[in-house]
Image (cartoon, rainbow, N blue to C red; front, side, top):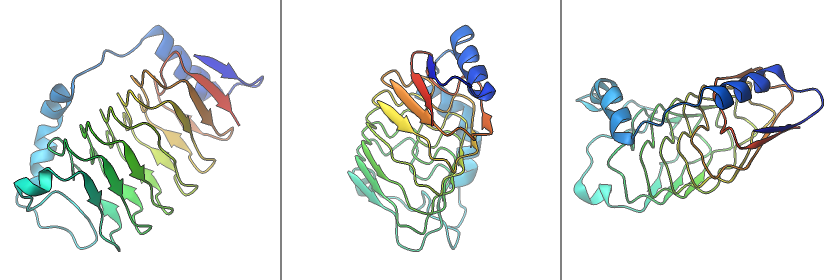
Length: 208
């Protein structure tokens, strides 16, 4: 992993060292789902759809075969596990500018997902949100974003470059780990917290 700055952010240096010296073993989506299953069952089992949320309830077999998800206007967040596991045909996600949070494992394992429209008011992308979205080729983060969770984009093997906006203050452990095609990452100079193994060891990081 190469860094292009004379005054290297020590947090970024730590992320580089951990990734180079102690690379994480890559779990499969099946293993991660097994680990998260109790949480997923609780999130999806008989709980009413909250007023301002958008989650995976009352879904038909036809719904699961859709290639485009459009989150309704006015929703404030995409719920935990909202489209995890079964939404293998989804290629595109569109979210309105009301959404401020993408929940934990919301799109985990959506292997055909290639395009996501991020809301302009989004502040948080939670843990595992886009874990294993192997067809996701690019992502543009809004200037409102403040945090990217643990393993949020883990194993997004088609991602080639990422620019982290200046508004982001924290990036979780392994946030972009196992993104094998990720060649360059631009991070803001003022980024306060970068988790261990946040980036692939072969990626070049530019501090801007």
